[in-house]
Image (cartoon, rainbow, N blue to C red):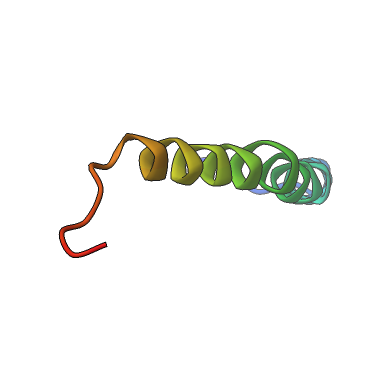
Length: 52
């Protein structure tokens, strides 16, 4: 079994302190625009609705 050390705990905290903001930025600048682009593309490719 692995023994927890202060150094190990500090490295994990630092890792997550850097990772979480990076995840938020990636979501905002990559995921959200890609989803919007996909919705626009899907709307253009759908056949026209009957009665319109």
